[in-house]
Image 1 (tube, rainbow, N blue to C red):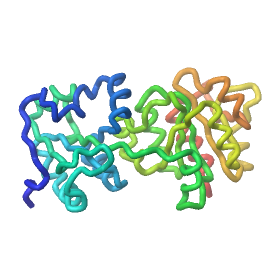
Image 2 (image 1 turned 90 degrees about the vertical axis):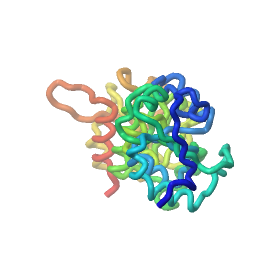
Image 3 (image 1 turned 135 degrees about the horizontal axis):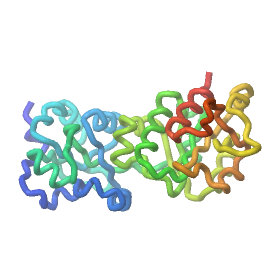
Image 4 (image 1 turned 180 degrees about the vertical axis):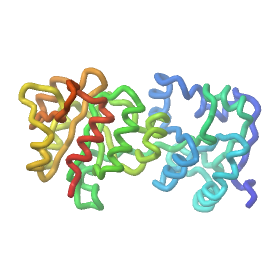
Length: 293
């Protein structure tokens, strides 16, 4: 199948202005500000790109080494058959470009060696409101169990939490205003694209956003070490109809204001003199223990 309708462009100049979406991908501070402002995110690897496309996300362009083009042939062909031009909000109105370059040029553009074959600059979909997220979950019957992330800094942890949420049946994820972006390249990659599978949104206020959950019938359970904390086993023994599990930032855990805003403070029972787990590990334990049976 000929790729010509895809507007394949062979690039040799790392300064080519058409590649602006892919410049300095390793500059976390720049990308964290730049991507949401431009309404885009970067999908890395054929697997993640396919999952983004399957979720209905629209690409602005692709960037890859020549040898990876064949791997995405069918996916790009299907996309361009449905959307001959990039007519998504903020789109170019032109056919979606597939930029192809030698590995050294790709590294000069992105700032790292591209091991996983391909990148795609994707249009960032609008986030639902908290009410829309909760009411639309579980096929419209409403969420019963959600995860809440307060101010996580490490994108790897954000991605790992989403992967566990997808695997263990969490209905939705809500993040605080200062939490790292779930659509940041590393978050998406670590999640293996499950960030496109688990519905999510961002609170406008914090910890006031927890009141929205409570008003919707959720019991808000903060995972934290505190004198009045109950065991996760107790929550499992008498599970609430709707449960929101709140997890805090690396190192310091949940803020005092978040703990005080919760209905219950919960701790994971541990042995061996260990008092806490990494937030990604803690989320997996809590999601498994409280899974809806």
